[in-house]
Length: 92
Length: 400
Image (cartoon, rainbow over the protein chains, first blue to last red):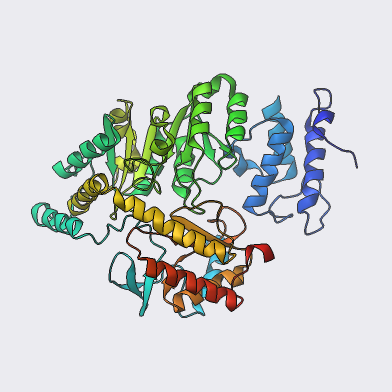
């Protein structure tokens, strides 16, 4: 699987697919249910993430892309795709 | 169905109901003193209260309260903006402002209303709130109502706070940073000097919740901001009367004159009944005691050190430093519940904290010290914890 270290993410690579791939890789650590993670995977419904795990995911994403993700958007984030889109909105 | 979301809590209730005494909502039959009571038929040392200065049973406070009830009646039957501002409320606001050396103070009916109300009002749409990740529920509830953009910074991490202010650019000047003096779950003190320096650098505003630190920290008991020497950098302080002052109610103070205008915009202040005058009178008396008897703070810290070191020497996983809140962490849920129950049976009442109320996936037995605890009572608490270890109901830190 490709690595998504900080240096690998630059303006050329940024974009929805980059964020999606980063999240899919990150979420493997939390994949207790061994589901196939895709855009439509539900963070809570499919992966069973706890609220603490969701916040850990958010913090790691914030650090990686040097962004702050407001709590206000979280009610709209259900799937991996939702979060990737929010990251894109914040970075664009 | 509408009620599906409550099922997990209902299951937990059912599980706990199999025990004689529930760790949540156990009924106190009788209060014997500031540190002893009868809970569900058992005489216990009260080690779960936030009665830091032991003032809940002070005869002077009780007398003041009784006199006010006789003079003013039992309640105001109205909000501060309608018919519920009595001379007692205004006098307490004047005394709170004087205590803090500022021009403005607001008295609220509860500490929760004070914190939630201020956090919901000071910042609004177009503003940003940066709150500590381990903030109290009243802060989270308030900021949610504010309409502001809400961003968390890592618990007590000045570096993370600075990073997030940098990312905001020009918006940092419209940002309210929120921190607590002492955090209620683990008893740790916020790094307020560093936070204040960052706030200054970026031109943000700072609100400090001194709920657990007012009366506890600082040369004159004003709290963690005073202890850190950064009061001039704090824009708003909120706190409660239900801990070191032994009653109920809350407050906000500020060096900004605008606080007296903000008061008229706080829904948790406008649309709720004001405090009972008897409660306000006891708080006024308690505040006088805080000012006149600093030795209570010394006793509190002596007691906190005695318990903290006693539990640490047993090998129990307690926090990194002495604090009036001494939390023992458990990784195992069943062990935590069993330990709480065993402590109760041995005559020690503490608070059980379960996730998500605890700041991690761990469970806590949270002990709160009081200036009124005797050394003998503290030693009995330590002995009760030693018995937990002997019975295999607690795990030493190095074995965890």
